[in-house]
Image (cartoon, rainbow over all chains, first blue to last red):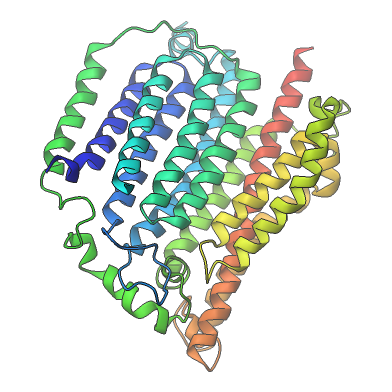
Length: 115
Length: 331
């Protein structure tokens, strides 16, 4: 059934948009935003895989004995915080590039390099 | 009903992603990313990932846009490159998408309990962890105990990233350590913001502490608490300026705190070796296995919380100081 895979298709769609932005747009900050979209699509994929229909959040209660899978949650939880830290590192590289080249447009940087 | 919500959230995410791709205003793109973060957090709640939603809401809708905006303040708001459809990257993106579409047909249906990911360690964590570790939140059990070594690695990555940002932004400029911008914060004239901020900040910090120490029983834990705590301090800095924020939390203290969290985490591992167990095997900490697990998890979550909060604040401070000094060298 179509509904069974709609989540995964949405993930593929988001991934494509993120990839396209990262590849085509020359502005370095925009590239990072695209990369962030790409990364979030992976998060959504993992969390979709973890979901069990009729299950609840993986916190033990007497009310339920069906839980979603906690392992992907753990992986993504840490990945989000690691993702923002590495993104901050990338942003500080962008800041340094701006200071050195006075531009964050890819083609202008390449032009200055070739001169 | 939840399926309907699920799909409408995903649809909105896709629309926002398109909007980000189209706009040439970076400020708008960052704001869209903030909305995107909040929407994906809502999606995570619907999919039962409450701990993840917590983190995503604080990071994706809080820290991410703020860092981006600080960077925009010295790289400029508009993109210069013109927008036209480029065929080769489009083909590559469509090709990757097509491969994924085909691969997804082999996946078990969404929400199906027979998926391979639910067959191996997942059920064991669900069945055994409440009695083996003694805490109801399985995400915390897996994060802090079963996969404690992995989490140690993640904390070290965050620590390293903070060092990297600090070195890149403040190391090369010969920043002396007692830099105090004289200019008051640009927000200082906004009375309403300041008063509402003053009322909100204690609540945010209190909530951060609650999330930190209630993480074993409800959704929460060191990662989430660290980010929420940092958001409180960042809000304070934005409202009252770097100078006053430095008086509350000096940069030197943050540098020590970032390392302290990792140190606490690693020490718990070494103490558990010395008490006769394996590295990060908390059962060895106390004669009673469950009590040992409790103590170990609380300690390492504290370490995680300290490192995450200090790293996020340090990263924000580094960007702010760099943008202030960039602004002054322009004049």
